[in-house]
Image 1 (tube, rainbow, N blue to C red):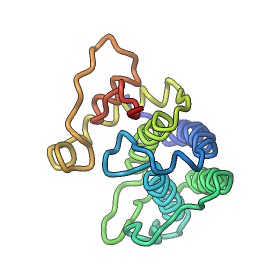
Image 2 (cartoon, helix red, strand yellow):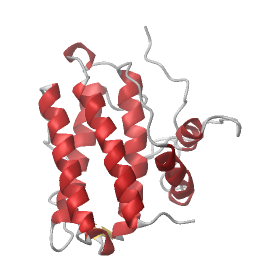
Image 3 (cartoon, one colour):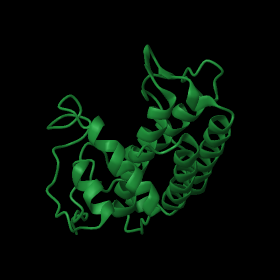
Image 4 (cartoon, one colour):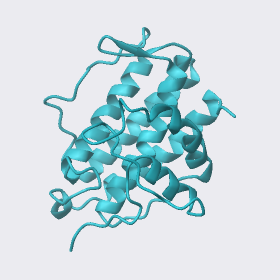
Length: 202
């Protein structure tokens, strides 16, 4: 059963609030540490997460749905942890306000590409559930998103995980086998190419 725009928006708001807490808890000495996204250390993943969140938020807020950038070339998130967390909260508030005003009923445009707004919102929820876990696990912080958010992404993700997007060298790594009896978040992680048992090497 498809999740409504209002429901997805509310779940995303909760997930981003948790994400802001995680980002605010990153210590300077952790910035060069590894993450489950092997191409990113903690600092680069923080840049990726905040850079795209502010991009998506601005795109939804734009009257034509046009995001301000098509890549993060040259973008750097605030270095101060509190300022970085504040950037997440501000982008989340802006996105929520835009969606409540009907922004998800029109396409979100990034560069020349366009995606239906409701589909983009579901994708953002899924992506930030995963990246929140990535950063929390990499920095030894808890990550316990709402069960409803995980359930919505478990329903959403399979249609997006095509051969074009999942596999070696693709946006999502190969699926990691996870027992059907595992917690829902672990199943979503495995489906999305992450090992739920991942820990940074000591």
